[in-house]
Length: 470
Figure 1 (cartoon, one colour):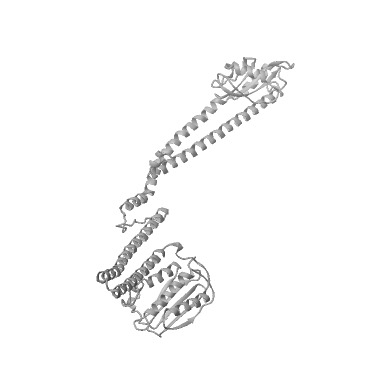
Figure 2 (figure 1 turned 135 degrees about the vertical axis):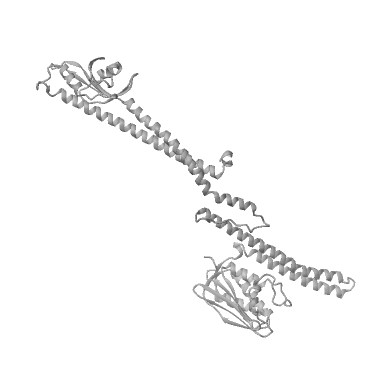
């Protein structure tokens, strides 16, 4: 594309393409119609000349209508032939000997063949007893003609009967018609251009609005939306653009919230570490060891926090889950065996589904064990914790049920939020359930909660049997 074409607006380019396409179509159709009409005129001329020449031959072989006997002389035949010729400004006949005309039609407004010696000479040379239509171009015109010899009763040559049509004159009428066609085509192109300019401008107006609104959008203000008008492609484009803005706004809001929450959570261990370092007595070995243990605990907590944040940051990526076929029974028994090591509880495998599923077994096991870890945190020693799985034709269910402190119904929505902790005294940073929800959503599933304060809690991971691939 040239630099000039790149500088043109979409409206101008569309109009240029439309005018070029329409002009090309009119030009091709005009040339095709002109060629077809020229061929039709030539065919019509040839058929007419052949027909009238054949009529003359039949007249020469018949009797004189005046006497009812054979023609007494060639003059009688020529006179009778000229009487029957219907002459016009573009067609006529002549009986001649060489380039000398002997008889011509009596019509005053006729094509005067006798004034073109070049035509008469060619006709004298090419006269035959059969009907042959020929073409010749002289200084006076462009002709199609047929010539047959005229014989005396004794068989001697008396001249030539020539009938001709001024092809150039008939073709000039055709040229005038198509010149008028060209003028009309140009006017039509102008009208099409004017209508198209208005129509294309009206059609592309949403793009102008889109550009104007897009300029006003920045990373600090993503609230601007573009009004959707109609149901066409541009309306769908506008809806898609608005949807993209919604996703960006949510992403920026989540990012700001994550940064705020992370800075808040990191500020506490950093303050503790600073306090320990400020109060540490380096000459007291016991104090140094105590401070070292405290600092290592805080570093471990910060490391877990960073790992959890990295996991959440990856949860929106397509490669976050790697789905593979898995046996639900084997995954249930394996996860239950690992969960029993999380704490001194009365672990019970409530149910184990059997069947093939498609999931990221590592991520799902991570989420399931996180639910088990939470159950241990919020329940008493030796209390019962139930785990189980089930499978239907479309979904699988993985659950953990405990006898812990439970969750108030008004806190069910908040418990899934980042850094929200039911009991601030319990170890953790409040990202466990957020990670479980992220893993569940990445598989196209949902996380369900059944609990009330003081009655324990039951968390259920509900996943499509194909792991959300569809």
